[in-house]
Image (cartoon, rainbow, N blue to C red; front, side, top):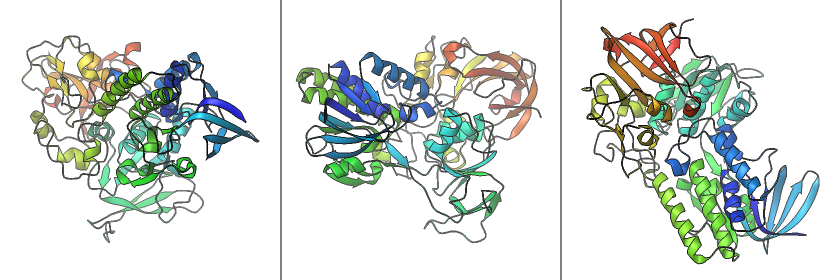
Length: 528
């Protein structure tokens, strides 16, 4: 038996964060991860994170993963890969399969950060090759550079379904439809909007009837469902696809904690069966902690903070961190977590379908919730849209209370204000002059900011949009401008392209369109 002060099970965002925090306090830490590479889901996440600077906002997931791995190495954390923990026993003893060998460890403390697994739904044909989980699609695209398919139907409109749909488009796939049995979009509206303006149609209150094909997926039939989730006869729609992607939720991988004897609870708001934990992340067995999705499904940002709290708690429990220092770290972590858990997507609102107003008392866009995009006539109600400004100015189509504020920090002139409440809707200050630098456009994690210059040339307007597709069009290229629903509305000429290292792969395209299209044109489509 090998003796270790702290054993961390799981090398994802929560596990690595916990290991680093504990190692900083002087503990000898070993991390076991069953994968060939550490980092968990972070290396699949090529999108920019939400939140504030402390939450790694506007930084892409894979870069955060790289930072964590470098920090783990610097702090002396031992990471053992291809290592599957198969049991936790009395006295915090652990058995691990490393390659073909079974190894026996005893820890003074354990942190379980095993994450979550993808849920599946069954329907006729669901076992055909070509029916895959959204996480599998991300692995294929973002880790191995393989397209999951040519024509894809996505089932699920939560953040995972929306984010992966956009990444499928970036990989060159055609997303023929985004389907969800729920009545409204489940994820952030800004994620839905960037998918919709690419021309993807949303089918809410719909589900899959059957997958079609003999030895692989060749098509899919969907149908509408009523309020009792029953199929409505005659509502079927057929699509030719070669891939069906499922993003129907996650379940905590909490089996090890249950086997260890930790008290468990069934909590639908946290994703299923989870351990009972205190504010330190400690389970009902002293010295065993849990962090990340294994203790409740949330975003990776929250998992990293929970990991840091658990790592500090383990260091405190083993005498490496004073009570006073732990209180300070716990207070900082709780403050960061609370910021992420505010707004219409916070835990207290999870599952609610009757929210109608923003925190500011403005009507939530029903078009955004039901179609995935804002209607033009709704825009004037929101503080980020100021049509009375002459010349170049930002138009911020962020209309839901989500925890995010990079736009405020990005504007050197202070034209954009959110304030101390991270979920407040961004406000454009009409008294300050925008320089047109575009940093707010590039910084927005939801790609919801556009620069509009309706006085650039008589009869025309210049619209600057965020663009994350390759190849980039050349200056002078003529294409089509698409509106928020993905409908072609006019001809567009590319008059400016800006890319810079600080923009982190978000290029700015400026397209010239007829003046009357200034508040309509929101995406560019190349000819041919």
